Amino acid sequence: MTDQLTWNDAEDIGIALYERFPTLDPLTVRFTDLHQWVCEMPGFSDDPEKSTEGKLEAIQMAWLEEWKDDQD
Image (cartoon, rainbow, N blue to C red):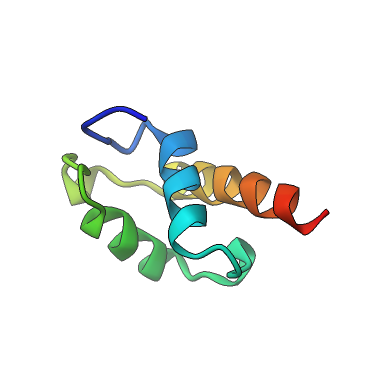
């Protein structure tokens, strides 16, 4: 994982969210909560206003892949 995260680091952010919330199904998370959690991450350095629905979806899908791998 890089030292400074931005909205374009969906995979790294997804992994970090899975590590923080390993039992939480990412599909149950509202985008408003997801946005807040990403902005509060240590090392996240991007402008909160640069978030888009597509970027949040990419983060959610990366998190979902990590979560699904652990469900098997």
